[in-house]
Length: 470
Picture 1 (cartoon, rainbow, N blue to C red):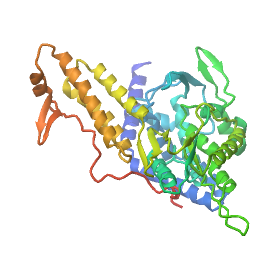
Picture 2: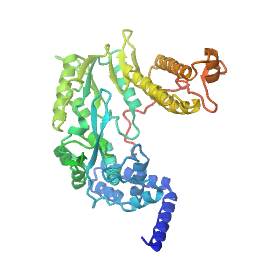
Picture 3: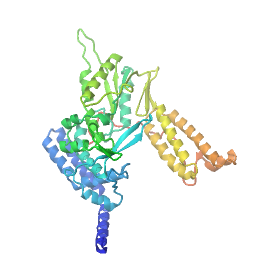
Picture 4: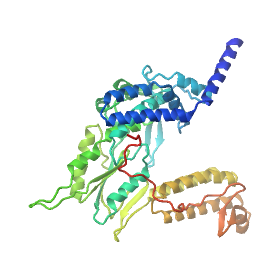
């Protein structure tokens, strides 16, 4: 490249970087949100023609492209490339990427296959699209999400805007806490849900443009230099996959409600209520029932429902349990005790995962300063505390604090094997008010694992309308 060309290229890069830095992101987000709200309103009104026109306008809008690039580069995998090895690091690269995005005239590249370790020791396959394909999927999801959200089950809480695990907890409490609530639980687990969804079913029933959806589903993946086809499932590394999975499982709640509706009392029959309620978070769900026979019937109904979509229940993980024995879901143990109280506590597995994470951090920072160690521990403590603050978690918080203290004491003693206990205590633990053991460095102190004052179980009403106001 000659000097003149280099100067021109540098000038273009500086201009692109300046343009990216000057973007009014609030205006961009407001525009996208406004169009999504109009899509949701049109869908509820049954105006499918307007829905398609608004989706087309959103997918080709400049603001949607900018927001898609921003979301892709700022999420957790923003610095993980696909098979092309390209990442967008500089403002100039991000701005140019947004300008060059073409939703309809861009065939997806194959996914880069990698594996992540599961808690049971097995490995889960993960398909990583290129950044360009992730941005295009993000634009498609912006247009598709309001439509799916308008049709979603009321008691579905996973991968939905404005809903969370805390909402699922609230719904389980409402369904199981009363004295005459259901006493049997069907714990459902769909085997390899994302990997086994039928492409034929999705292409036939999806609200997404068939050509774009087919290209995403049939992109294939690269592993060890070889190209493999994808005949089923949605890529677990794809942005649009959670929306497609939710769409696949939507309809289960009305099916159960109609099949197990309460029957009014007649002259020959008393009032009957099967007490069947569904609570679903992504592909994990529970179904309540008044007795074991009803739970078995619900299980068969679920099997038939998901079989049409190419899915199966995992026989090992799908259990029918009595509420007095308790069950685990989303990191909590839900159990009704002999006194009739339903308590939702952090599960033993969730506690052990937190302990293991803290232990790994302490081990990795055995020679680091106290302030650096505290800066690494505090986000884990805060995250675990905030997640479980709506549960009955006081004893779990105290236990985790005690275990953490023991690990930190060993960390401190190992650093100073020739010093006494009093010297170690005075160096690393300070006195603050009535607290005599505060793990505190020069600029940071360890957060205490206690429930915030006046905190309530977070969550919204499960019967709320869509986040897109219509």
